[in-house]
Length: 331
Image 1 (cartoon, one colour):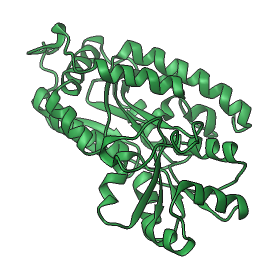
Image 2 (cartoon, one colour; image 1 turned 90 degrees about the vertical axis):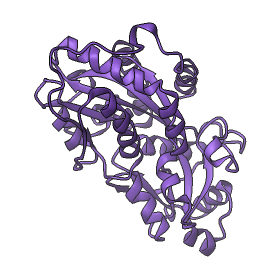
Image 3 (cartoon, helix red, strand yellow; image 1 turned 90 degrees about the horizontal axis):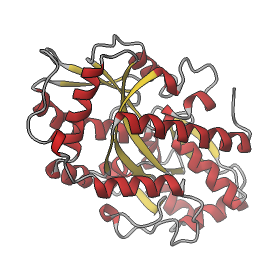
Image 4 (cartoon, one colour; image 1 turned 180 degrees about the vertical axis):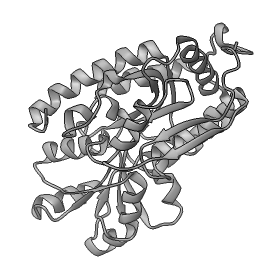
């Protein structure tokens, strides 16, 4: 994953430069869009993907001159919502919002009704790190103050630490596997409908350890009910600068980010794909949007349709190899 993080960081540095082709007014294909556009988020409201999409949608509405309607469609982890986006009419009025499950669902979820080739890639729009987090209640009960405390407790008490997963076989699980492998421990896995419900469970004392994305964590951090222990990244992040990175704590193997992207149904007209791609690029490179995104814990990144298609293919290859090594591939 270090290679993935490096590539995305480089893209983020390049993003502020708006290309001349997409500057100013963007030519519309006919009268499109003539009505509101739906973006399907396959996780519960309040999660990292939902937060990122709603903020971006606010800016995209201004460019399109039409409403963006965000629909949270959960079920089967993220599978039901994803599939609804795939089978929608290919007319540009339904956009699917994805995490990196676009490259991994078919490897990890038995009976998933789609593959990464069943969509029309549109663009990547964010890359966010996860944060090892515990509830204030469990921290006080068990005397946990650091990530090392949690790991040592898990090693001494096999199966006694419950780790909340934001969905089935999302990047949360990959971070769990990396953490278990690096430390010779085993967590009691507890899946939720999304990162936000998992975090709320930790806040209530019903779940010991969770790994929300930064945007999810920031929404609850001021409550004092949760305690961030480490950022699953090579370096600290500015929004929680007092929280160490796993690398500086001596756990370089335990990094995990999620890239977020949009897709359209297959056979969406090329002129609509190009138009939406240009609109999203303009918004994602807007300094005002980028500043607001960072304030809520979203790391904005732009990657166009063609590059996203190649990127997803590479990610699929990487995870096909790793899931085989871990013995968890279901196909």
